[in-house]
Length: 82
Image (tube, rainbow, N blue to C red; front, side, top):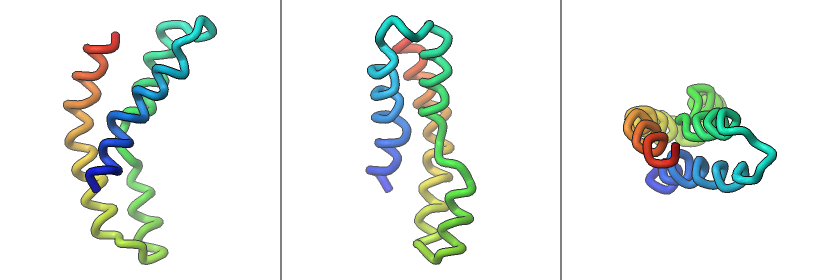
């Protein structure tokens, strides 16, 4: 669960910023990509986990924790990088 949260909320947005760091992207485009990649996992993931019986409790818990942590992580990351 911790690995999924770190990858989704921290590593993925930093990687997106690095990939959009060239001159082809405007600042607004970089901000949009950053916010889009920093958002927590969608609820649809839990639906698929339940449908295919792939640890639905673990997936639901991870979504809830990442949703709560994303409030803090997106705000702090956005202030730091922009």
